[in-house]
Amino acid sequence: MNNIKLSSFIAISSLICMVLVLHMAPTLLIGMLIYLLAKRLGDKLSLKMPEKPARLIAAVLITAIIIGGLTSVGILLSKTIGNEQNLAGLAAKLGESVNDIRNDLPPTLLSYLPDSLLSLNGSVSDLIKEHTRELGGAGKEGLHTFAHILIAIVAALLLSVDSFSTLAKAQPFAKAMRERIQLFGKAFENIVFAQIKISAINTLLTGIFLLIVLPHFGVNLPYNKTLVIVTFFAGLLPVIGNLISNTIITVISIGVSFKVTIAALVFLVGVHKLEYFINAKIVGSRIHATAWELLLALLIMEALFGITGLLIAPILYAYIKSELLLAKLI
Image 1 (cartoon, one colour):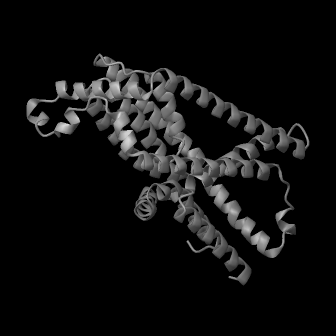
Image 2: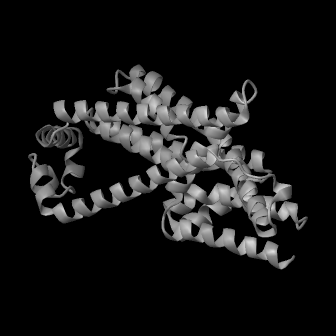
Image 3: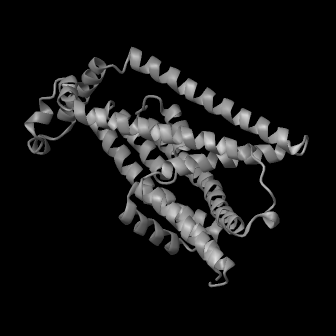
């Protein structure tokens, strides 16, 4: 291996380490996804017009979709928060949920619950006041992450419009780095399309549970159809997306009854564990890896970097394997 190629490996490894240590996996993944969408759309449009205008139109369309989506979500949240989900309403809902627990639990189990939990009467605002500093810190961290994501989106759109010289004409180090980045991008693309299949399976199972199983027992969870849609879009995020949709379903189940909450938890935990094997099987077929390889990568990266490691583990493993295949080492 020559010095230039070795330098490119060191550079790409350093960048990946920075992403993991600084917990910037969501920023990286969203930026790459926007770039992939803009590039795919630009390639299709370039079949009917010159390449440069096609890329520009694709970037404008993707930007419009992002702005429209964020605006719609903002309007929906503002209406929801303004009408029903203020602190008083949240406190009342919490009180109702606690009463449901007290009514549904057998007396033998009820005695094991702390008195503080059973005596909750809507003191959510008091808790918020007591933890203002923590909430402020969480809010600042969320805004910080959101700012990073916005910057990544803008960079991805600008990158999709830019024109680069052909790989053959690039300078040695630039050429080596572009080879590394192209392999990483291909690994990401393979994972994205595999994740769409995984999300579809999760959505199907969740839809059966919410729209068929629960109604069969006389339980109609509020917003059940909306929850199925949310499950699909959240499921496009590897592993963590399933956790997001599961949390939403569990919270809404609490407002119905304690028994429904337990049933939802059992089902969702089962689906979450099943996702590890589905993920390994479907993703493995796209990157030519066996299920145990990917499971091992997921477990190691989760142990080392938590959720950030889980998010990037399939892509990183696919990239490393493609490099080894290219070097004819495996």
